Image (cartoon, rainbow, N blue to C red; front, top):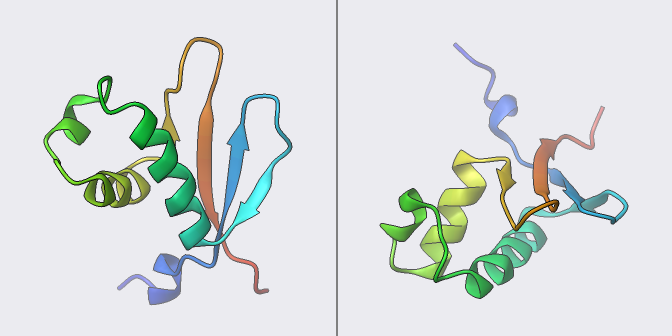
Length: 85
């Protein structure tokens, strides 16, 4: 049985084109992804198009992916990290 601690989301590392890495809380990452998705509602991947609510799209993206294509030569990636030793 997996350790439940494996599924705790303490923080995320966000990597973005031409930006230093950032440590974000789950709430901060949610807000960041939500703003990115809000600007791209006309050009979403198929799995996100099936969800009509922006919050649902954002939650789905956070739970099922670790990157989002934001254009040629640009990237947005995030990874769960545990800050406690």
